[in-house]
Length: 83
Image (cartoon, rainbow, N blue to C red; front, top):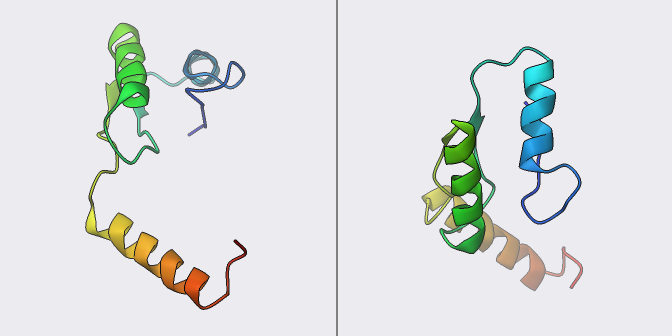
């Protein structure tokens, strides 16, 4: 497992793919940390398609995402998270 960024030139998807292949990875899956489909997920999907790598869907409206956001909201209102 490794981390890559779609919005930065360093630690790019290509860098991560190359690093994993150098370490012997033969099968990869991209699991994007994105909330919704859009420009960034389109870029990731394009890269994945070109590189022959499977890609999971963005997180979307999963109940756990909504629950986490609601929890963070309550913490902020209670003054437990800096604004």
